[in-house]
Structure formats: structure tokens, C-alpha cells
Image (cartoon, rainbow, N blue to C red; front, side, top):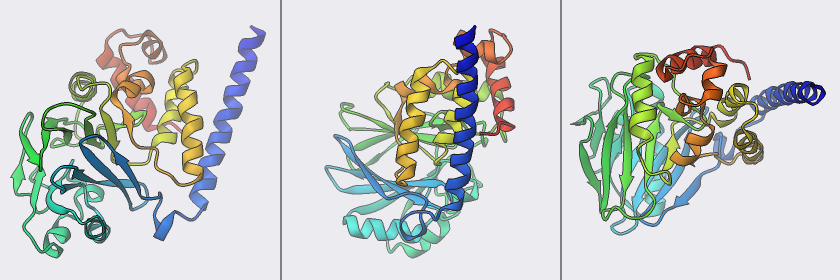
Length: 305
């Protein structure tokens, strides 16, 4: 009992320190050229993913096929930075992959199309997306050079939300999934236009079915906030605590905390762990994972790190 009490005290202190950390970070100037994070390249066997920070905490991504140097950009809300990066990388931009219609993701589409000297194919699953000319649905597919892209319909945050699963043409090597505001590292998006059933299907059926090694590139730098809630749900989950410490070091130098992997999210993301007894107990004891999903999201909506 004595050790349990001390563990509770230590957890409370750590929670307060994490909250203080957030306040300090908000007061600091953001990174290079006014960005919230540094630019970073993630190199996979078949592709390169350039992480491009935008706005206060958004991420855009430039996907480059290693074989053909053809490229696609995900959620280009800052068209000028996209164009500059494309030109510096000397790649051929041909496609725009839009996860959903919200301004901080799709708001740069029309400007990018106007500024770019060649025709761009603009993909998305919602007619509210600007400059859309390639409507997609579940299991639609297309290519970026030699890379394959499969569309996953994940309605809930918005009714037309699409995640993009990108793999090598031969299906070998590490894949990547671009999840917008459906799946975050350690969390998920708010249920603005959907239900717990839909988010359960998105996270625990469709995204969980991807290979565990799949890299997860989400739409925002929300890792520390989400992990703080994950620790609140599962205070004895050591993987969560380790990720928090790692993420603090990354953010101290304004480095992005993306990507994670699907396998890692199954270990520490409470919204992908709604089948686990520890998560269900925290959410009130219901054994129905969809009920647990709904209760977790309501609690997270009002949670203060």
C-alpha cells in the first residue's frame, strides 16, 4: 500500500511537470523559419518521406518514389514550402493526397494547383475538398511512380476522411500510412461527424490490419498531449512512459515525433487498445470495445494534460 501511494504521488508530480512543459513550449519561439518543428527526412527502402511542418502543429508530407523520383504531397496547407521542397529535391510532383476537408489540411490545395506549372491530380474522399479532381473510396488504388497507394475510408472525424497506405510495387519492405486526423501517435481525432462505431472500425479493423512495421505519419504534432492521456488511462504501461521521455527529448530540440508504427500504436494507444482489460476498467468496466471507445473519447475531449 505504501509503495502504491508513493507511485500515485510520483505520477501526480510527473503530470504537473508535463503540464508545465507544455506551457513553456507554448511560450518558446517555434523552429526554423518560424516552424514548430525542423524539417526531417525518413528514408524507407522504397520511398523517402519528407516531413514538412506547417501552421502551429500540422504536418505535410512529401512522398518520393526512390525509383522514379515521382512525388506526391499529403495535405499541402503551405504551398510555398511544398514547392520549395520539391524544387530543392529535384523531384516530379504529380499528385496531392488530401486526408479530409478541414482548412488546416485542404486549405492549400487550390493555391498549390494555381502555382504549380503542371497539372496535379488531387485525391480525396469528400466533395468539400478544394481543387478535388480524383474522388476516392475504400480500396481504391493508384500509383506514385512505382509505389502503390491504397485508400482506406475512415469516416468519423469527418464523413469523407481517407487514410493512404503506401507500399512498394512488389509489396516488400516497410510501408507507410498517412492518417490525417484519424490516428495520431497515442490518440485519435475528435468525433466531429461520426460515431464510436466508425472510429472503432477505422482504428481496430482497418488500420490495425496493416503490417505492424507500417510507419504512421499523422496530421499533427500531438504526441506529448496524447501520451499524457494514455498514461492517465494505463499508468502501469511502461511503453507509454518510455515514449513520453523520448518525445520530450525530441521536442526539446524541436524535432518531430513522427512517425510511429502500427505495432507501436497497438502497445500504447488507448484507442487501439479498447479490447484490453486495463483500458476497459479505466473506462468504467464495460467489456464492449465500442462502448469503451466512446467513453474514452468523451473523457479525452475534456482532459487537461
